[in-house]
Amino acid sequence: MHPKKNIEYEKYFKKFFWPLLFLADILLIGILFSPYFMKRDYSANQKENARLIGVSYMTMNNEFYKIMSEEIGARIEAEGDKLMFRDPALDAGRQKEQIQEMLDQGIDLLVITPVEWESLASILEKAKAQGVRIVVLDTNVYEEDLADCTITSDNYCAGKIVGEYFLQKCKSAKLIIMTHETTKSGQDRVQGFLDVVGGQKGIEIVQKIECEGQLEIAMPRLQEVIDQGVEFDNIFCLNDLASVGVVAALEKNHMEKGIGVYGVDASPDSKALIKEGMMGASAAQFPSKIGSKAADVIYKLLAGEEVEKNILVPVELITQDNVDAFGIDRWQ
Image 1 (tube, helix red, strand yellow):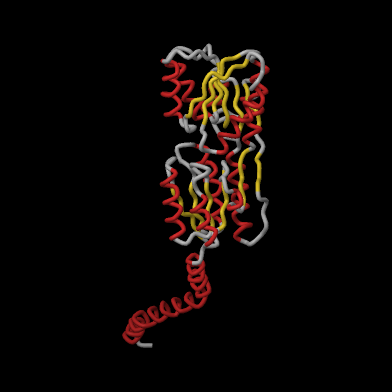
Image 2 (spheres, rainbow, N blue to C red; image 1 turned 90 degrees about the vertical axis):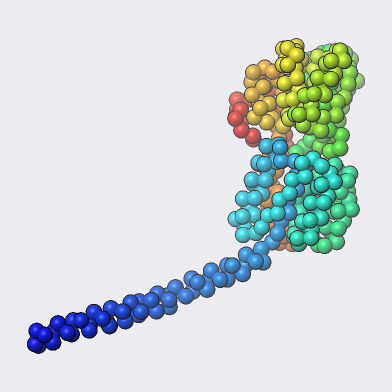
């Protein structure tokens, strides 16, 4: 071929062949990967039809609920469903309003820890009328038939085992009881404790203090009792947020070495106090187990399967003798 014609041929080759080859590659890629893109479109459609789970704990200023929520949230995400979360911050009226809002958004299932166990009948009846399944966690609702499943720690046993340990350590005592009367869990723990220690010779209940299970309420209310000159030497607290508030009040008044403090939860803070000898004992709850069981129940209910009506998660006593085995820096 003539050199000039060869050069012209190469120019035309570069001008037309490579673009045509590029277009052919694009078409081939499109054919090969079209199932993938179709699959992505299908997944997007599935996401639109995901189940919506509404969640309302009584408060989120307690690490216990955060751990439960992590277990449930992880399962909901893994299943490709959606979570709608609301925090009533210990306001029963707000909780009812937020549940109504979630019902209006079309939730398929409601997970709830009631702020006040007797206040939710009307809103839960609305939920049932809409076909919403209901899972109650940590503390009961008064109208238990409205719940498809209730999962709690064995709260009565928690108070009982602390009471039994208390009697081993104290043959006489002037006791203060820190309570949360609007929750069934708080009532059960206190009752379990009192059924063991009440009526025992030398054991006197000098005062009950409503603290709503909150550190920032327990501390000043115990301070008021101290300022009034009430004599006491031991305190039982319905939970360990209250226990930590109690210990803070005692420290402020340089009374921490003379007063025995007992609680329920075995939170990291209370376990540290037990290790240091500033608390006597606590009954350990297991929020991760409650959350895991709740996640299983949620998906059984959504699948139309039968579940147990009431599930009790066992508790364990933690004292200075075994606290290291549970780990001070974490929940169980």
